Amino acid sequence: MRIPSIAMISAVALAIPVSAALGQTEYKLAKTIDLPGDKGGHGDWTTFDMDTQTVWLSQSPDHNVVVIDATTNQIKGVVNGIEEGTGIALSPQYAFLSDHESDVTIVVDKRTLAKVATLKPEGKGPDGTTYVSKTGNVYVSSDSNDMTVFRAKQPFERVAHYKLSPDPAKDGPDVGLYVASKNWLVQPVDNVVDIISPTTNKIVAVWKPGIEGSIKAIVYDHKTDRFIVGTGDLKMLVLDGKSGKLITTIQVKGKVDETAIDEKARRAFIGDKAGVIEVIDLDHNKIVDALPSEANVHTLTVDPKTHTVYVYRNEGNKVDVFERLKTAQQ
View 1 (tube, rainbow, N blue to C red):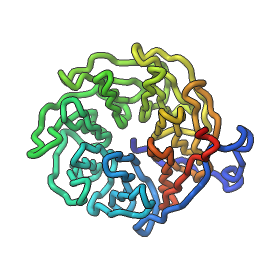
View 2 (view 1 turned 90 degrees about the horizontal axis):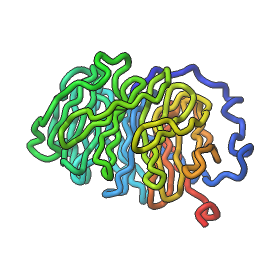
View 3 (view 1 turned 60 degrees about the vertical axis):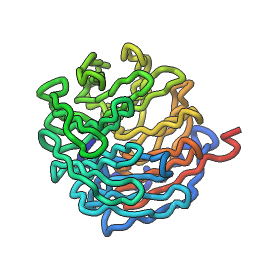
């Protein structure tokens, strides 16, 4: 997940009304939330928790994880002492916050934000962190290509450890995705995708979609049984949900990091470091809208109930809240 910043894009380029060329935008900027802390910079992951109606984001430059109340769009709290926050996984009770710099994963009570445990994954640089509901375990992948599995309840004992494929890896793993309907942990590593069985903790397949750059975070669309995959190759991949076969590609402006999905609205949102959030129509595999942002933006999330999109502008140390227009929901 951790990617060096690209060169800043000119203000003129960012001012281009991309959505105007695509037609009437479906989203409007409803609010900008100023985050605590005194500086912006690399921020690694943003996710939405339905249980508590909160947005969680790794605010790496200020050594925090920030929690936003999505019902009020106000700061709910801050988890301090996370030197370089990376992956965030959410179980029904806990948040698992990986710290790349300290080589640990901090366990926090989701409702009180109190720290309850510190886990030590194998290897160096814990990054992607994924909760698997079927087994009740949490998976932590590290830049050293290690995968460590812990119980997601006290006393959080270690269950398993293994190396990901390929080994050794060039860039290491990114953030994985658990698909409950398939009972798969879908784990990007370099330019391939490891398919892991959480039941056996074995890699059961390795998909090779044929790109040169890194594969980034993945989302899954149940309706079409397809995976939407971000890459560093200035394109999104659409993969068959059974075989991993490449169905089509979607060109984007810059390198992609996190992708968020709103299946009910039939939209996916791309964290594009070129400074724009492209919006994909899941039924037609094409870009239909774009939300303005800033250079190096790359993490975001969506509330699947309200269809509100939260874009973490890590350089500006702000979160933009985009609401879906009622006309678009009709």
